[in-house]
Image (cartoon, rainbow, N blue to C red; front, top):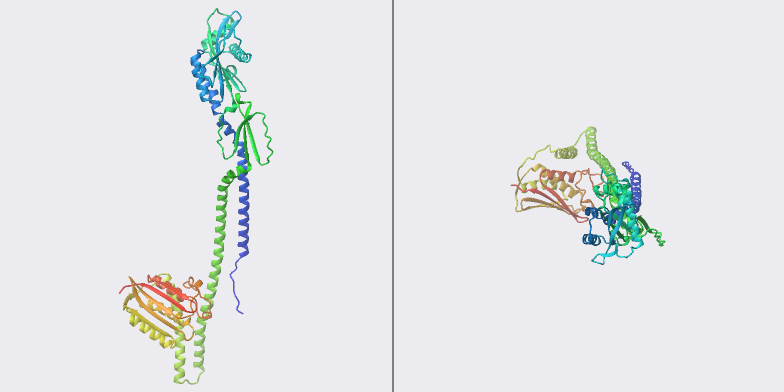
Amino acid sequence: MPHHNHYRKNYWLIIIFAVLASLLFITALGFAKKYARKIVENEFVGKKIDVLDKNIESYNDLFFNKIPEVSFYQGYLDSNSALIYADSILRKYDFVKRILFFDAYVSNTAGGLAISPRVVYQFNRDCPKSHIIYKAGSGTKMDIRIADDFNSMAARLSGFIDIADTSRSVNNDEINKFFYAVIPEKITYMNIPRKEDIKAYKQFVEGSVDNNSVYEQDILSYYIDPQALKLQNNHPELYEKIEIKPLFYTSLDTDPDLLTAESPLPGALASYKIYFSANRNFLTNEANRRFMPLALMISMGYLVLFIIGYLIYRNISFNNKMFKLQYDFVNNLTHEFKTPVSVIKIAGNNIRSAKELKDDTRQLYGKILDEEADKLNNLLNTLLSFTQIENKSIKLAYEKVNLDEFCRKLISTYQLKFPDFDLQYELKEVSTLYTDPVLLGSVFQNLIDNAYKYSEEGSKSLKITIFRQKKQIMFKFVDKGIGIPKSELINIFKKFYRVKSQYNQQGSVGLGLAFCKELLNFMEGDIQVKSTVGKGSTFIVTLPYAH
């Protein structure tokens, strides 16, 4: 049993690498999915501030921009201008239910500073006109809650006058402390007096001058309905539902998959909160969306690992294939050289040991020596020519070739060599070709040798047909040999490749067809094959036609 040498291949290493890479890929995807879900759940809690800020923009605009406009009137708001101002507020801010306007005056009395309401107007959303709810001297009494609002702002003004510094402007801290009164569902604001008014008010308090002037002050109360805020969900991917709920609202829903968060509302909205809720299944879509880029990055990394593994495997397979080719080449080449050398040695020994040689014996030994020497010479020439063609170190020797004469000489030689070989040729409307006859002869010899070698006894035949096709000349070699399996057709033109069969165990080094392919490429031609196992093969050689 012949000994087989195998190139060392660590397939187990490749398998382990593939398994570990796959496990790493699956684990990374699992962690990435959990990470994406955790990020979404954290943002569910963290992004509520964004939603809160978005939904109190209108409230902040009222508080910081629209309400301070009252001070522009410097206390001289009347019923008409107050109506216009209140209407702009009620139209723009849906959460303002009504507005009270205190038309007040400040005067000097024996006791010092006096602040009194002259008229109290009410502006409602559903009433296009102002409504007087109190007028001094009319005999009507002011509602105690309204009176408390007025007295609170009067006390704030008095407190401000005590600490006021007329050498500078009123700062923001003083404005927020003395001119704003913010309680749940109500904002009360008093216009900021001018410096001259503040000086006069201080003189009233100190009693240092006899001044009977009356100064105007405007006080407005804005009644707020937090539930009338128009909610906007600027993170719909995180929050399934957002609602305004009382500050101490607690959900009775016990669903473990329900995520909730809340954020208290500021200022006059403070008796309520924004309540956020979403089911975990609702957040799955967002988690999957966040997961996709991570999965893509992980997949790209895995693809890189896979490509590396594939390149390693391909390198191992290529090295293994090259080892086998080299091994077969050396083995077959050794055999190819050994056979004729052994025959020559035997013939030489017989000649040397013979006391005398008859003419027929001498001619037999001469023929044997000549044939075996030709075999060695042809083998060496093929190897040398192959190397020269690959290195492009030879040049084409073009000459005009008479195809009929070329084929007749070649066929006559083979008919003498192989009497049982039915070898025929046919020319169709072509007689000459401008080419290199030596290289063309090499192609013919290799294809004719293969047709004879790979045919059954009694059916060794080959027909060569030569014809033109447009600007090309075609050589069709049709035999009735054993044929070539379809799976092998892609490999037969590779160097050192041999089709495994009973006809090809020892007699080839796998260079014949590869040599033809390289030779024809060098001559700017091509070779193709069609074959059916058990019926034969057809080789078609194509060359540029020149004559």
